[in-house]
Amino acid sequence: MSTKGRTTQRLDKVLSNLGFGSRAELKKMAKQGSIVVNGTVMKDPGKHVDPYTDIIEFEGETIQYREYVYIMLHKPPGVVSATEDLRDRTVLDLLDKDYLVFEPFPVGRLDKDTEGLLLLTNDGKLAHELLSPRKHIPKTYEAIVEGRVGEEDARLFAAGVTLDDGYATMPAELVIHSYEERDDGVILSRISLTIHEGKFHQVKRMFEAVGKKVVYLKRVSMGELRLDKSLEIGTYRELTEEELALIGRTASL
Ligand code: URA
Image (cartoon, rainbow, N blue to C red; front, side, top):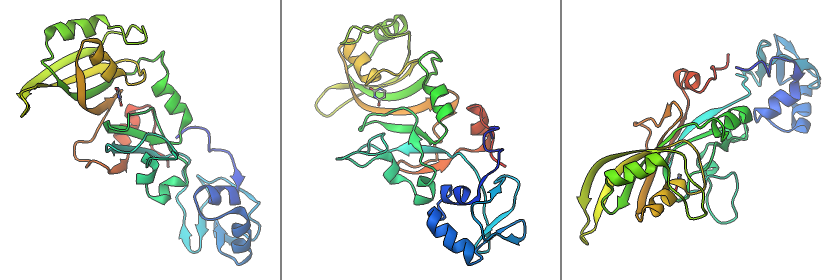
C-alpha cells in the first residue's frame, strides 16, 4: 500500500477506524482486558502501535488492518452516485456496514438511471488521479440509442461535437454493434462509446448533439479497469490484486 499508514497510531484510533467502537467504548474494553498487542494485554488504548506490523487482537480475534478499500460495484439503475441524499437511495446503501466504516465514496458519478462500473474507495488520491481532467482517463459506455446511429455520427464524435452549453467535446470513439426494431417501429442502435473526459450527462448530451436519444446506458470500463462480467447488477466485490495493479495500487499486507 502507500507509505501512509506506516507510522504508528493510537491504538483506539486504529480500532475505531475499523469499526470496533468509539474511543469511550474502547477505553472500557481495554480496561476489561479485551485488547492484546503482541501478546500483551493493553489496558491503555492511547498507546501507539504500528497497525501493519504489530499483532493486535480484539476480544480474542486478530485484526487485519488496512487503511483503504477499493470496491467494484455493478451499479443498478435507481440509486444515486452520492454518499447521502435526502430523497433517493445511494450507492452506499448497497454496501455492508463492514465497508462503511472505511467511509468509501464513489469515484465520479453515474446518472441515477445509468448502470455499470462504479469504483468506491476512501483513497482520495486515487479518485483525484482517475478524475483529473488533465489525465483524460478513457471511459467506455455501452448504450442503446433511439434512431440509426451511423458512420456519420462516428465521424462527428471523432472530431468532437458541441454540447447544448457550447462545450466542444474531445474526440471520442464510437463503435456500432447492431440495430433492432422496437415494437413501435423505432430503430434502436446498440453502440459503445469511449470518452476521455467526464462532463455532466456527457454521453446523453453527445447523442443529443447529433439528434438522437440514449435510452439505456451502462459503463463498462474506466481506465484499465473493466466491469467484471460475472458481477451481478446491484452487487459488488473488492478489487483483485491484478485490478489494483491496473490502477497503480498494490494490495495491503
Ligand atoms: N454520460 C451520461 O450521460 N451519463 C452517465 O451516467 C455517464 C456518462
